[in-house]
Amino acid sequence: MTAEQPPSAGGIPVGISACLLGREVRHDGGHKHSRYCTGVLSRYFDFQPLCPELEAGLGVPRPAIHLRERDGNLHVTETRGEADHTAAMDAAIARALPGLAHLRGYILMAKSPSCGMDRIKVHNADGQVVRRDGRGRFAEALMAAYPLMPVEEEGRLNDDGLRENFIERVFAYDDWRQNVAGDQLSARSLIAFHTRHKFQLLAHSEKHYRQLGPLLSDLKAAPLADIAGRYLEGFMAAMARQVSRGAHMNAMLHLLGYLKGTMPEADKTVLLEQIEAYRRGEVPLVVPMTLLRMAQRREPVDYLRVQQYLAPYPDELGLRNRV
Image 1: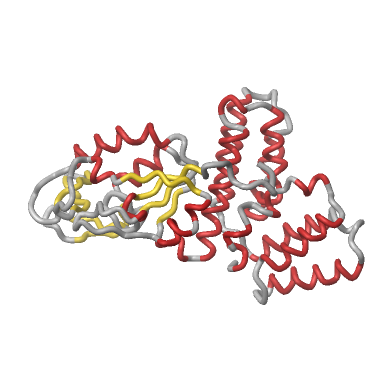
Image 2 (image 1 turned 60 degrees about the vertical axis):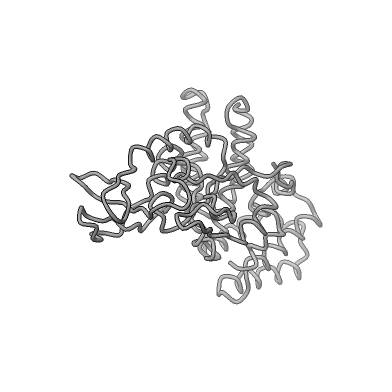
């Protein structure tokens, strides 16, 4: 997938907590419909819903559950009484996980003892809150089984930077799964992927950028699958880092270096002014990035034509208007 191509037909497969699609699966028979997910992201993502509590056979409506610590272990119990659903929940999760391997990302419901990513309340044997650093039973198993898959909570998508970062990671991970993973893996596909994402890597983490290039310099030093695995691990770790304004500025100036020979001096001056205005927080990223893309289209440079950094996701999402 090049910088100018739309997502594949049918959308990118992304998992989601079923209640976020408006399905009435919560313990009280309600839902937590996310209009951003169904109204915006569904144009590009093929959402595949799951409610682990329903899969565990708890039904709707049902007693509320929470995480309870007993003898050093976390249990999924009803908030009132002693009913323990840990075994049923774990069995349901074990059944579900193998069927999620094809997903490119996952959006979870926050504050849920099954789906919450972070800051979940943990109770003692008497039902009192003893800490708030737990993770939902399903979320923990999902992230352990697929540690490279982008995962985010729906509520955190209200943050402009976190939303942009998550969606960028999903599109990059989809590129890997479509064009490098499995039967697609070859020295050529691996090098091509790295080439497409070089400026993204530079923006997200110069440290990883400098590590991953040399990793690919000798593809006969180890089995190709091993090198690809190490590369993807480093790549996704880099992509998980939000990009600072200074790092974006650095990447844009590197990119500009490929265009200097073809740009009129007046255009270059305007672009540099807007890059600096972005660094100061006076304009959003879309302003200097649009000028860079216009310069590239006016006098195409082959190396830049494939750069995902110029368009890592569809413009219609408007993500760079807000970062």
